[in-house]
Length: 145
Image (cartoon, rainbow, N blue to C red; front, side, top):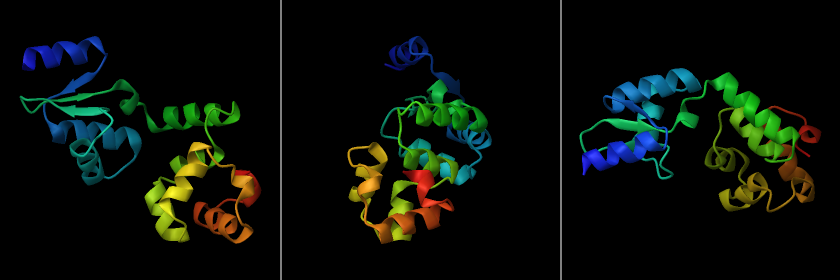
């Protein structure tokens, strides 16, 4: 089974690491995050960016290893082209998750998910909620709309 796993992930372009700690160190350095967060992210990954294989090694999708500045530039370009929302970009830039923003703004995660994904337009949000989001993200509300 492990031979099949390795072959599959090699064909998909994944990068292999000896174990979770080594992979987490690389990810944390590239993304500018705490190593504990990186370990948690690997162990709880649900979208197959990082896969712990049967032998304990870790296969990591190359997109997950983009340097922080490269990822920021990529998201900035996507935002400018309208491929992602400005809210999604600012969340990345401020290193916040939707769940963290929900707690800090007291706006439901579900509602924020709709704005982040673009299913709802942020310009339709109530002013007080929009101002809370802008305050937490340390930007002007006009930057988000």
